[in-house]
Length: 157
Image 1 (tube, helix red, strand yellow):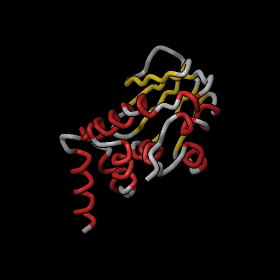
Image 2 (cartoon, one colour):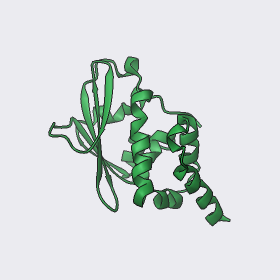
Image 3 (cartoon, helix red, strand yellow):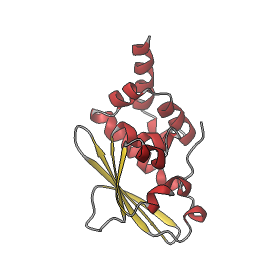
């Protein structure tokens, strides 16, 4: 039965309309995955699609009023089969997300395993909790990391 559940959830994430899934539905799917299932999903082609979608949604979920005067480049490094990097730039009430490492020096770098990076986007875990549980390493200024979830509208499931 667990195999069927994993297969069904993986199928939901791999579906052709994945980009059309609402932020709430995306969070529900991710939140419903066990640690083992998250690990399975975060390999191969599906890993790239899931990460791309999760980070791609950040622009729409940005809350400029909550970010206030924050000016920061946040570098996200996901470890696993290979390292994947995304960067979130927050400045002047705007947010931009890009895949890959820029030449700019980040104010904060967040390093985490593949599966751990999906926890904040699903409301399953915040950066502070993940840091305390050693599932997230922070390099540079920790203050942007501690308030990062306030800057984005994270669906509550």
